[in-house]
Length: 459
Image (tube, rainbow, N blue to C red):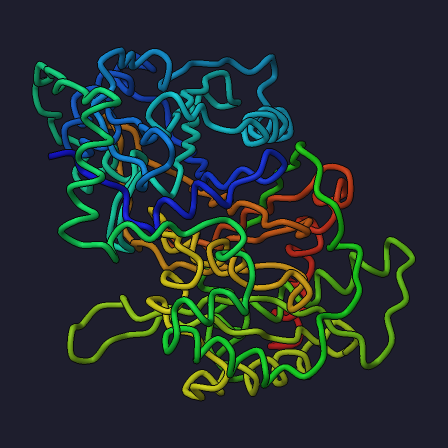
């Protein structure tokens, strides 16, 4: 019996559009591996058995009688997924981000396993980069891992396993797929109710289909009486992207929190709010005292019983970009985020999965998943923040120095921001539409300035 995509995973494929590919990206910056890129490539090959889905492709059922199935890719060629590139001299960060922007703009090939990784050499200082692209339909569940994660070890001397010879299973033919679909329908008719694009993107249809699960989302929508403000962040999205990055020392953010109160997440939102304010002003946009930008902010919660951060809520937060005082901005955001326990303003992760049909490989994709299920009129951008390990990690003996998330854009959304903390630093990844937010590097620079401004205010 074939393994069928869940209706939720299948709906993710239905939702994807040419201008908004929904792969989740990651950019890892490493010291030079002792064995060069060959060692990294060997590590990927050796650890592919840890992610068996990475050798499987999606097969459609004839006539769309049922959701697609996973089948082993008998023509799997690692070279089509693991590619190499070299930056021209001198290998600056700007050159790297230009390459990443072009790679991020390209959708994944639906005829092959839905992932790619690029090994990039030529960075200044002898460093190398690994860029990963993983489609959320490839994995199931918030605890799933992607290829970037299986590369990393806490031990620099970790020895990769010996490569295991792989023999693909026979792929079922069209007649067999149809017969299995009909058999499943006879046994479990409800299991084959397809989640179509129109139903997944329309809030009313989804509410009828899902019932109680959508109730939390509808309450959240009703609690936000006005649509999102009009900003240059929203409009038609092209097929081209621009990626920018920023950094902040976790110790500096902790000092700001200690001086002004709130949480580190509040501080990060205040930093981004100030950066958005200055960015809008630099473009000549009208910014007055009441100007706001509405963000969809997924927040991971600590589950006291399970001892994990698997509980996630997603909030619509009005960022006070019209407030000129950084300390007041932080206070207002802290107050807004303290409403996290209000069920009327939050949506559980399970609710978002059920409504939109997304099962991402990392929590960064939660914001993008939620964005697909909500009308773009309700918010201006997505901001994710995922805490990472505070100890060094290694790949093929090379220490990872930096890691930047690249959160996909939703329809009508010109900017998404992902944040990850690692080994004492918070790394910001800005993914922008090249046409509408082509000056995203200005926004990244202003993020650094806002951290300095809040530090100065903290004394």
